Length: 235
Image 1 (cartoon, rainbow, N blue to C red):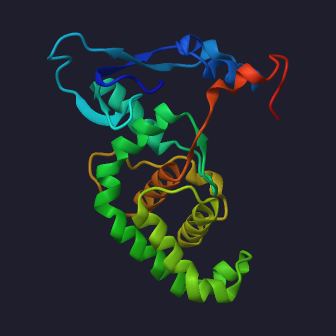
Image 2 (cartoon, one colour; image 1 turned 90 degrees about the vertical axis):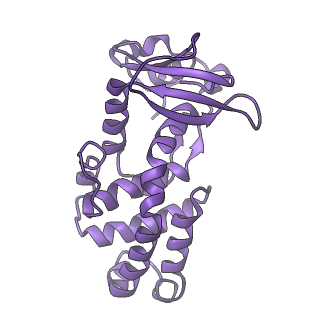
């Protein structure tokens, strides 16, 4: 979804509806995908004061500076958001991501992330101290690991947002060492947001690190397709 004007909106799941997206469908097609095969999350303006019952409400940035929009999320759409957060691909660098989707995912995850932010930051520092040799083996300068790496990672986690790819790589490499699984593809899917209880375990560490990467990601200009030929293909 795109950012909307201030007001109250509701999120709706449209099966196979991505063909109706404004600009991102063009980029998806140019990547070799088929937009008509993909589901779509659409936002609809609420014309009455009540709106759907039993909804989770997020406060998001709007198209107007210093004004917000309220997004109501029904249970089915909330399950989709949980699934998306659990299945974010593991990435060692910040994303270039559609800002509307980023707004939703970050806002939904923020209360849980904030509740565990200091705990995660402390754990990263502790891991650097205990496993400096493993980080050195991954190519990091040993002096940097001992003197700065843990502090840099903790500061990035506690900041809550940023745009430094270096900081993202520092955090994700520490977590990779902490998890100890050489097959990072296994980190692409966890079961944290979809489970009933919030427990700070390995699944939580991986899931919250993915949220951190989202917090430090950049907005992707999905209107760029206006400036490149439709015959162009991304590699």
